[in-house]
Length: 297
Image (cartoon, rainbow, N blue to C red):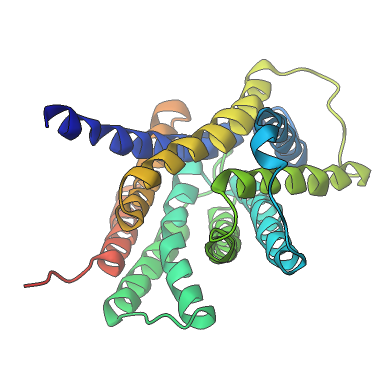
């Protein structure tokens, strides 16, 4: 019995570690952008991730794909990483990683509304209230942001990060549909491979310059993004979900903005003004209210 109780800590530890890795991706992107153009960074991340998934080919080549699945697989990959990373890359050029991290807390709310519209799921008044509070907090956070060298236009940057979350919501909804037929490993591999092909076309743009210098820290950040985040965070999250109810596992997503603020402070030296701290609390409170389930007597 003691071993069984002890073993319940492993999925929790896996989920918390996955959230730290996903939060750190925003920090790593900011660091990578200091040496390389955003599209080069994203392409590098996709290539590293695609290479990592080659080690799982024995599990992937046996998957049978029906013709009817292709449109959903394509829509999923176009939403994320294609559209998602375009918006997020531009957003992190304009706003701080800490503020962008807080915007990610909007994802569960956007998924709830998407499920209401496309899957005909009901959305409670509490969810609507929480969404309104969180949106107000995001607007307040953005309007109070002052331009700095690392965040020249927080208002526009936060809006672009919000659009990235809209794309992520589209990805999540399509993933729900596909997960009944395909493993998470296969679906994540599809994302990486489609993303690598998609972002390769940006090399044809005259605005993209191939790297002529090697910057150790930005290069290490790209490798970290493609391996530890794309592959490692997924594996940890998948293990956690397999061990505890999915409804409990999804609640861990709300740790991402908290970890991002902490990492942004420790690594990048990012700080909020007093009013922005209040706005951040408002965002998190709105998310908490929207996801809180009424207690049953």
